[in-house]
Length: 263
Length: 322
Image 1 (cartoon, rainbow over the protein chains, first blue to last red):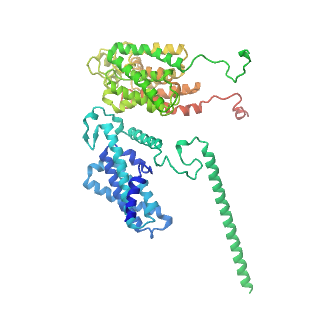
Image 2: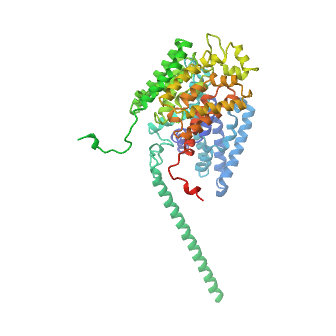
Image 3: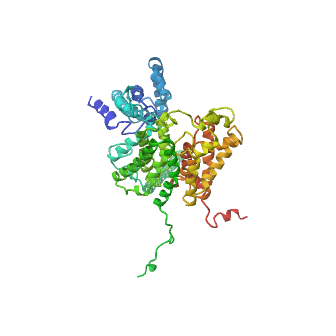
């Protein structure tokens, strides 16, 4: 049970998909024009994420390694279709305001990411909790950004007018550019506070620049290139060595067979 | 020891002009248009200009202090941004919205990208577009003397019949458009006042003739070809004098940081501006398109500079030799 609670904590706080992993940026930018849109998108994604994690985890020993990505997409797409039909039937207004972004959940990188990184390697119950945690984390992120944009851009929160802000609303924040302003400001604050997030990794990465784009001056890429080239060279040498070994083994087998014939 | 004995690297001959002198020339050149706007629209227009200028300078000072960067408010570039933004606003515009626009211009468009010389689009125009998206109703409220009226350009775009008849319906002639007896944004109504300022800048060699002349010429030809009224002189004159194109061509399109530095690049940039403005004015929903055209072409500037780089002596000779 502790592992399941750890999964929830991991999804909502430690590896929050919006604020820390910075995955699923397309819906984050596109549908957070109001708090209710953000909440609706988050919960829809959560539902798909839980079901997809459950199914992929259950089938993890059946799905062949080579075709796992198409298999994941087929599973996710089936659930997205179900969820979309349910939305059309029971929440038509949400379906209308989210529009094309519902079918686009199929290619949401949070869902594929969790399938690849967690559900395909872990038991069913843990995967379900992972889906709940990640989904709620995503919902939290979208709703928070949605509240902020709706408040500044429209003077409302969840459709309720806030009187002292309603007179000073700045409409661009509910339009597409506003999403970029808010997200950029958020990331700038995270970088400044050195908070853990995808643009601000605390631990040094394998690549020469440490993966921290804020300190990149361009010169770090040189070391990076050398590192990658060295890796490629090593891989090539390995390939040549393997080919030689295979050839040697073949020759040995042939010699053995001929020796047998002679006998 | 004589100073003559000191050896330094080139350049040895320096011009006296600096950012501050250039920017003060621009401020001087903007005085006629600003004064006309204040004369036509009264004290609120004056307070709008003051609000924009003060908030622009204050934003730049506050940001640079907070970020521990050298403070550059003495170079007057923030003041120019403030004045240009104010000239792009209708005279009924609320003061607090103008302040929001100025903060956006300096903070988001200029300082975040690295301060003066580093901005990728004109701060004043980017702020105008920001305000247009945010406060559409207030930005297009060109009421004069409490009579809410459309600009001459909108009248011509939506009206039928000859241009003279449309203008006469509003008791206007093309001369009114040229002198500035019309509704519109504060600084763009009087073509005459803008031309006086532009002549000053051209004489002082602060701006080059290339971009504005190519801009206006391309635009005129384009409107003549595709405007639907042929080369009707009244129509073309109304298009040139009725909107923001004069202010845009001489004061915004010539901004150093956001226009090409090569001579041919300036010509290409002017042509691109003329085409895009014409397309926006004829086929977009709005009657005006100068500000969007200029910030759009600002984004093309690096490409224009790349293809118009002058050849150095001897470059490319072997290619052409047979």
